[in-house]
Amino acid sequence: MILVTGGAGFIGGNFVLDFLRDPTKEGVINLDKLTYAGNLATLESVRDDPRHIFFQGDIGDQGLVTRLLKEYQPSAIVNFAAESHVDRSIDGPTEFITTNIVGTFNLLECARKYWSDLDEFSKKAFRFHHVSTDEVYGSLSLTDPAFTETNTYEPNSPYSASKAASDHLVRAWFHTYGFPVVTTNCSNNYGPYHFPEKLIPLVILNALNHKPLPIYGDGQQIRDWLYVGDHCSAIREVLAHGKLGETYNIGGWNEKTNIDVVKTICAILDELQPRSDGKSYVEQITYVKDRPGHDRRYAIDASKVERELGWRPAETFDTGIRKTVQWYLDNPVWVEGVVSGSYRDWLQKQYH
Ligand code: NAD
Ligand code: TYD
Image (tube, rainbow, N blue to C red; front, side, top):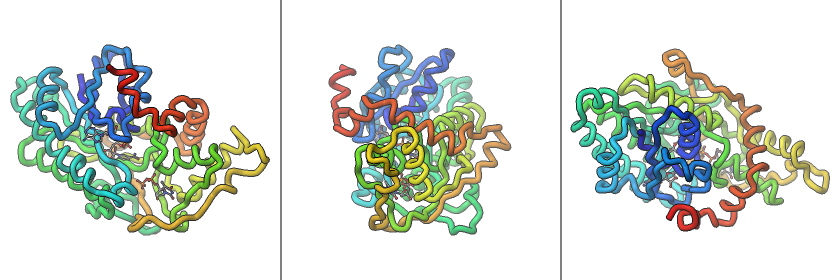
């Protein structure tokens, strides 16, 4: 068994679904607070799978985390749980401090106590995998080399500062207590089950709903984009073979400006679901006020994980974005639940 936190969110949900597709895996305990970003509809296909055990709860709840560890004796923890949206962190940073920093601290402490009482064999096998972001490294100029694992931390938003703090705690628990951790710092993900407050799902759904496609500032900011299934395969690889105490940068080798990403989505929609007036979705692009402190460029050098663990992404941006747009067209029930807000009732409806 492994314990996944935040497994009803975008990446955690994809990870749980991918993990359970492997029939040799014993199971997943999924601890998720079900904030606005947690969506049990994402986990609908594993609702009746006895290998998926869901608990609504907080990583900051010491009693609950301790009880789950004692009862299920997981061999690993993969920590996805976080507040993850930069714009929300600017509007109100409190939850980012509470979950990303204090919550991670609590999880580390509960896990360390659990781990220290394990027998020698289980102790050696145990892993705490912390899922983090490339945003901890700050912003690059156009000519800077991509982030490597030795870049200094220079977080610029409340979100990235809170993730940086959690990475430091994880590092310290390894160095101080010998607690067996690995950390991955990944670039921007996209793919199925992505909550439409983030750029790619927002643009797909706004386009289809005849709404403006908001581009912050000049749209020339650059992000490296990774298909979520590739992020999940990287985590599985690092969890299985990563070196203790190490960090691994995970990326897609896909640097794109925001305006290029949006135009690509428009072109795919023009082909798959043309507007009834015959015009392009590009017409809906609207430049809006920039995000305060907006990082200009992120770029990941993912050569360490390739060199040491042989991992490379399977999708290019072209294949991944096409799959993603198609997924949103093919899954109107999930989309409708999110857009109407009815996904929030899922716990009452489906999990008693
Ligand atoms: P998300 O916002 O979609 O999901 C977060 C999940 O965590 C939600 O299900 C939410 O209910 C849950 N959660 C929040 N607070 C909790 C708490 N206190 N206790 C238990 N559960 C809680 O986020 P995501 O995009 O899936 O990101 C997952 C992780 O990956 C985060 O740690 C994020 O920093 C990191 N990350 C994300 C990206 C990206 O592009 N989305 C890139 C790199 C790293
Ligand atoms: P986002 O998906 O919020 O991820 P992050 O801020 O973690 O990189 O945003 C991706 C990029 O898209 C970022 O540069 C901000 C920009 N953006 C827009 O231009 N318009 C939008 O409506 C959103 C949500 C983001």
